[in-house]
Every structure is written in structure tokens, then in C-alpha cells.
Length: 294
Image (cartoon, rainbow, N blue to C red; front, side):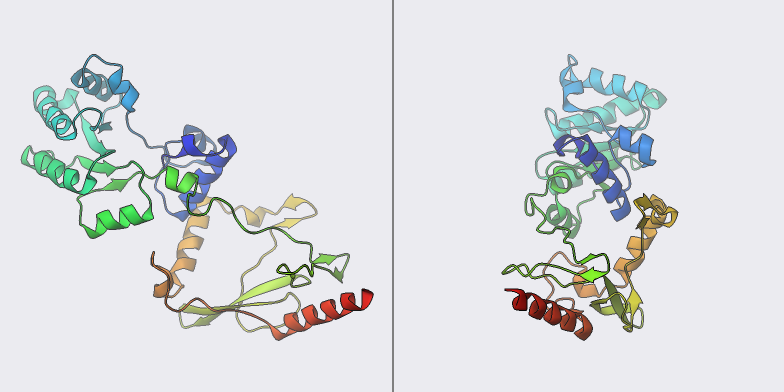
């Protein structure tokens, strides 16, 4: 995850790093996230570092001296020339110049990855990995994978830090119960389902086939998904299982979803979510109660 500079503030950068680690990202370039959250820290060299040297060769040598096994950025001037330069330096300097990867940050990354892989392999540098970055999103990554581009690592930042296709979340917390009494809104287009709730997941074998939103106190077949995480203003210890446990929990939940929902394209058959009859009846009573008040 490379996107800290695009987020709306430092707190958002940490929140992104944490969420993406749970989602399966293997590391972050955010040093604070590494220190505070224990997320593996990864990164490469900046264009500005290379530009600050008289030539690219000196920049590569000095950076590799400081960070043996590093990943070097190769598109500052000419991508394939830079790859050839890394090969020449590796042969000339041997153990003094250890490079673990190259990063393609622009251009036709599928073609450049194939050309770079061919050059590296022919030179005996088969262990040098290829990292792709630069305005990648889920669709570009999927296209590169479908094209069988020999890319080992994808560095994604902006697309997950500031979401262009969904810049705002159309959701809000609404008061639905107060002092044991159902409450809510009846505004046009914003009618609430009153009262405390539970969500039940219906399983068929190892696959989820639908959810039911119900009253918290009603008995519905299925696995309850909502659990208490805070009491009297304090977060409960069970609500903070750690990143590893959270990542495993998410992966297990995704594995139980139907395959049609695990694609980038829209599912032909949406995942069914129903409202229980008891909850619909409570909503009807609530609407009737307040219609009598008017």
C-alpha cells in the first residue's frame, strides 16, 4: 500500500493501512503504520532520489549500498536502459550491489514486465522480482494478471486511499431505540426500521445463501453476525482481536460467500437480504403510532 500521500490526513492514512492489511495487503510504505500497528513496512526508491544524483548509475549504487536487497525504480529516464544498467552493475559489483527487485511505475507495464523479465533471466538474475505501480486499481491489476504479465508484486495507493468511483458513503447512524422505546424516522425516502436489530446469515453447507435483518429479541434460524463491541462507552477486549485474527476472520467470511459475488463484475443474481416479518410489523406499528399524532 503506497497511498499515504493521497489520503485526507494522517489519521486517514493509518486507517487505510490498517483496513488494507486486514483485506490482505502484505505491507505498507507508511512507517507510522508499521510502528504503531505492526504492519510490515515495504518501499522502494523515489524518483526525486534518482534525480538528485548526477546520473542514474550513481543513484542505484548508493541506494543499494544503504539498503541491500532493495527494489529499484527504473522508469525515471528509460525503463529498459535502467534494467540493463542494473544488470551491468550486478555483474560488475557482485555482492556489493544486491538488488531484490525493480519497479515499473509507468508505460505499458505488461510489455515492459515481459521485456524486463527476459533481460533479467538471460543475465542470471532470476530472483529479482518485478513490482508494478502507478495509478493501479482493481481493474488494471486484473487486466495485467489476465495478460499473464510476469509481475510479482502490485503497489496500489491512490485508488484505495481516495476512491474516485465512490467519494462519499451514503450511510449514517440513526437513532432507532431510546430508553427501551422504539424510535426512528418517517421522512420520505428515509424511513427507519425501528428498534435494536440482529442480522442472521443463512447457510447451505459451507456457503452463505442469504441474510435476514431481524429484531434483536426474535428467534431466527441462522448465524447471528452482530456482536457487542462496546459497553458503557468502553471498547470490550474481545473487540480488538488484532490484525492477524481480523485478517483470518475476513478471509473465512469471504470464502463462505457465493462465487458469483467474488468477481469484479456485477453478479447476475444479487445476494438476498430480507427483513423479518416481526421487524416489518414493528415498522408498521411505529408508522401507525406517529400517523395518529399528526
